[in-house]
Length: 368
Image (cartoon, rainbow, N blue to C red; front, side):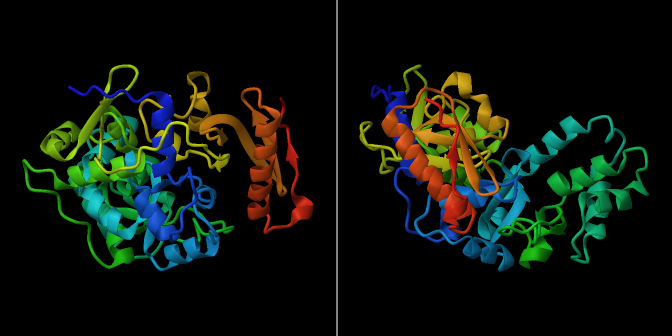
């Protein structure tokens, strides 16, 4: 039985350390994306803010170049959400996510897909995208609707893109300060090789690897947290198979938390700097129980797409940007020292987002 209890503050500091939010890291954007197991990226510009908050001397052009050089890609993966992940992880993880992706798409389009042979739809989707030309979901859906008119273009296009045929969203979408539609290319065409095959029946090395990677970036965590992050079934079996290499704790609710033995678990009294997080940041969304970083009454702000401010490691405000000005709305009373720290980091965020034009940096709405 695990006897060591980790309270919410201990879990908070462990999360911040592993999420590169306790101290900015000296690594490349590509390496940060790998360490974080990807960044949620349905809003194309948000990963740039997420990496700016985590890396020293972050240059957004380097991340854009990684997309152009195809070392990172935008694809549907964890939770059927668009994530920015390394090319290697997209290839290694896609087969393990395939059943979940299909299950979630079918739950949305159950009636539209009634009577549609999914194997035939997958084959038709591969044929439509075989030439490697970028296509929108609508274009793919309309081409497929010639064969399944009752299903409709939207259901057919999204089912192929998000579940049946591994795809990537290609630049200019996702580049720094560039706009572009969600045009898709088959992952195999974009990267020049197909995804890794599924693991042999009865084994789950990819699931075990995912658990290790998750714990390195999010742990300590309960098995339910791992599933909340990725949406995958079957992970308790993977965890059971790797029990001997893990350590365990309890949280204040009595839940078992698993972890890697040598992973950082800082002193709970370690000071935590103010950090400005993007919309849908996985530091919050990567858990089933988010109480380590956000109070229950504010739990919905990140799900709703709000950008949040961490003060002493916890969500304490939301923030917006307009014409280079950062406006901060406090969710609780901020002390004078906290307001000063938020203003300083908000000014840095505004400078980052406006190319350092200090004349356009204004901090508003701190409240108190």
